[in-house]
Structures are given as structure tokens and as C-alpha cells.
Amino acid sequence: MTRDTTVLMKVPVMQLWAVIISLAAWFIILTEIYWNKGQVPISYLYLIFFLTLIINTISYSVGILIGYWRINLNE
Image (cartoon, rainbow, N blue to C red):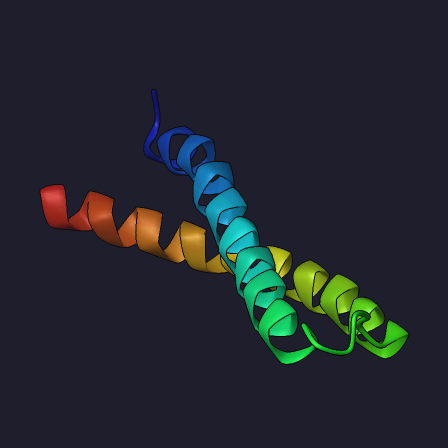
């Protein structure tokens, strides 16, 4: 298996964890802030959606960089 294939096979796992952690953080923070009010403002839902897309894209790029960095450390 080539170096590129190895990196690209591991990146989606890192990307998935970044998205899960960010969504969990949003869930916990918004639950704590709006617990007494009983509802979250709609604008935050749009913000969560678009920031999740951004985090998804950025984590893919960072995952590739980290993957190549780890391979270069092992050589």
C-alpha cells in the first residue's frame, strides 16, 4: 500500500471524531445555557449546521497533514 493510500484511509476516522466532538460540545453548552428556557433559538441551529460543515472540511485537511507528519516520523 502506498503512503498516500494509508493516509487517506485513516483521515475519515479523524474527521468523524472531530465532527462528533464538536456536536457534543454544542449539545452540552446549549443544554446548559437554555435549560430553564426550554428551547434553543433557531439561529443557533443554523450556526451549528454551517460550523459542522466547516469543521468537517478543516478536519479533513488537518487529518491529511497529521497523517503525513506521522508517516515522516516513522521513517
